[in-house]
Image 1 (cartoon, helix red, strand yellow):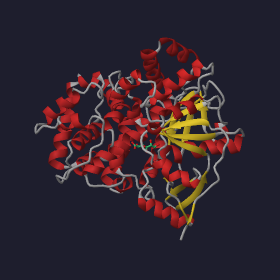
Image 2: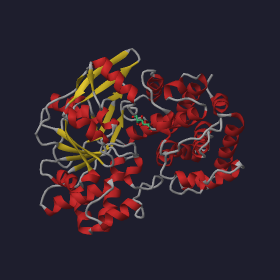
Image 3: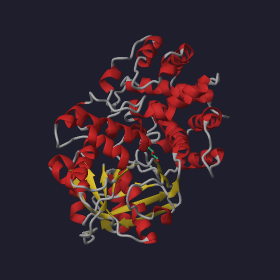
Image 4: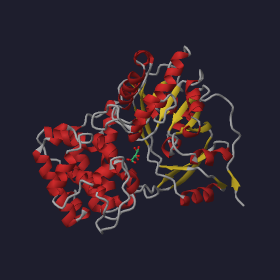
Length: 474
Ligand code: CS2
């Protein structure tokens, strides 16, 4: 009988409340905050909040909220036990308890990883969707369901109690994520109480961040592997790559952990780092996910092992993405691309193409479409990224190249499924009608529509691999 991981839970106040306690934050932000505390002092813990399911709480509670983080490099694995969690609340079970935790005088930071769609905004413009069903609910009820709703209602409690606001630390892959979230929160606050909105605008802080570490979803086989390696059963481990980078705008409105003491880059402007990461990493990740899935590859590493796709990605970086990017201070973009190729190819990381393919309607604007729009505006062709967009369209049709059904997960999935037609030009016309996804410049670009239809036709008649090979670097 294997021993079970257990750590005596700490009663100390948390300091950080984190909304959306998925694998990513447990493999990235949580251990990093623990290291910042060890290196720079202070007493910081994290109270996690699951906005949907009790699963993570139920797995972690018997372990005293501790879990194993397993680092997977091509040359071997290394385990670490993370003990910085103070507890986990499940929001739908007790929204009032979550609001009280966020409003506690000891809470200084509310961080978030709720995925792109969790912000209830329109991906193409970054503005709040006032008619989003969760937002409609949160305007009418003091007990919210959405992440923006929790932020606004908790900030209202703090204001009513004469407390300073907490710093809102967005850790999702949105461009200028702090600025976008500030806009969403202010829009929602204004629909509830304009005085509250003015107070948040004047007193609140929403630093932008760039977060980067590949942390795939955990499977039963992963849990068995962790138990084998460590000799302890852990119901909630996370597995991650060695690489990590966190760049944070240094504009908090209250105390914060000494993040810089643990290697977090504190800067005045995160924007160039966010653009680099979203377009070079996430843009090619999504491209590989759609094309690789269609070609029958289960993971990103499997897709990269095929020279057609590795060659296509090299071309995307060199010819299509880097030419329209401003390098952030201290970064060398071609070297960044070389490092990314090695990270994607890491065979120890089994990151499923299906997982990354999720929620494309929320991801494509900042990952791919912005690069396409800027390149086309400069009068240059963008065949590789155009192929990636066509692959997304084909993927959302719900059938792969062998006719098998695809489990398409996307908030727009029902609508996307109706857009597929036998004539690629008709399909493209339908997709380009999606104002919440495509920027106006691309919706009105007849040349782009033509290139997209040709790429889609190629995917249908020749398949993803042949199309990638046709564009790949030799
Ligand atoms: C991925 C990201 O699932 C996805 O869409 O592209 O989660 C990616 O692994 C991280 O952003 C890496 O930092």
